[in-house]
Length: 88
Image 1: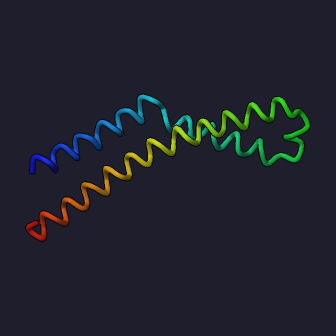
Image 2 (image 1 turned 135 degrees about the vertical axis):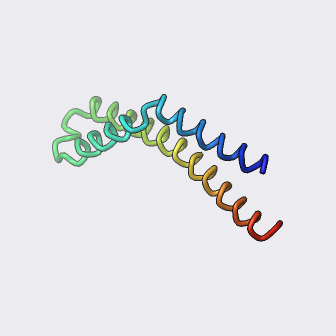
């Protein structure tokens, strides 16, 4: 049960960090940038387009890393629950 509590605490900390880093806002920025990228005239100004692509890549990386970490902690909790039910 100590492990279960530790995993739940870890999940909560990850959620707090996601809120602190304002990942919801970053996801909105990603959506806006992806919309811009889909515009046919996006590459008319290559230097600006390149900078926006770098920003988009960085935002995608940040969001994916934290979401992935949360998903892994959630999966670990579920696996532990199953192990407890099985008596392992």
